[in-house]
Length: 314
Ligand code: ADP
Ligand code: MG
Image (tube, helix red, strand yellow):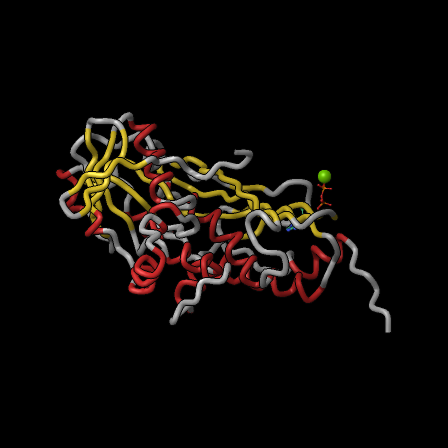
C-alpha cells in the first residue's frame, strides 16, 4: 500500500501543533503568521538561536529522538548561561524528506524536553533540503540582571557545574575508542541536560557566566577576553569522571576534557564576597588573574594554555 506523502501543513499539524500551551506568556502559538508573547514588567527578553547541520554537528543517521532532545537542550543551555527562564521556542526544520517515523521520534525527543521545562513550541518553518535543524529560544530575565561574559574581576573564583569531558569522551567512543563503561559518556554526548535551574540560581551571585559548548578553554577564553582579565586553573581540581581519567591514561590526551565540546555545563565566576550566596552544586577550578591568558597549574608546574575555541570556516 502506498502511503500518501505528508505535506508541509499536515506535517506541522500532526507532529508539532498538538501540544497544550503551558506558559502564561504565550498569547498565541502555532497557526498564524507570528506567535504573540507577553513580556511582564521588569523583565527583558533573552533571545538565542542555534543550528545543527547533518555531518557537521551530528552524524548522518543519528537517533532522531536524541537529536530532538539535543537541539532543544543546546538552545536552553544558552538561556541558562545568562540566567534566563525559558519561555518558548521556534523550530525551523529543513528535511530531505517527510519521514514519518523520523519526525515522530524527533518530535517526541524535542517536545518531552520542552514539557519538562514548561517551554512552549510557538512556531517555526518547514522546508525541504539537506537536513538542518534550527531553534530560536526565548527567555525572561529580570531587567539589567542577565549574567554576562564581561563581568569577571581579578580575584573572582572560577567554577564549573557537573563534570568536564564526558561528552567529549562520548564523541571519542562514537569514533571508535573502546570504553569499558560507555553509557554515561554516550548519554552526556547524545542527551545533554541544560543547566537551567543552576543558571537561575546564579542571578545576583555570579559575576560572569558562559555555557561550555566548545570546550572549557575556548569558552572560559571568551569570559577572559570580554572581561579583559586572565586566569589560573588548578588541574587537580578539575571535575573529571573515572572514565575520562582512564581515557587520559590510555591516550595521553590530557587536554581532552578541557578542549572537547558538547558538555553544556556552566562556567562562571564569583567574587569572594559573594561566595556565601552560592547555592548550587559546582566545583571551584581556578581564579581570575590580572595577567592576560590562561595558565594551568599542574603538579607544581605552570603551563600556559591557548584558549582558542572551535571556529567554523577555519
Ligand atoms: P508562513 O508561510 O506565514 O511563514 P508557515 O506556513 O510556514 O507560515 O507556517 C504555518 C504555521 O506553522 C506558522 O504558525 C508557523 O510558525 C508554524 N510552523 C511551521 N513550521 C513549524 C515547525 N517546524 N514547528 C513548529 N511550528 C511550525
Ligand atoms: Mg506568513
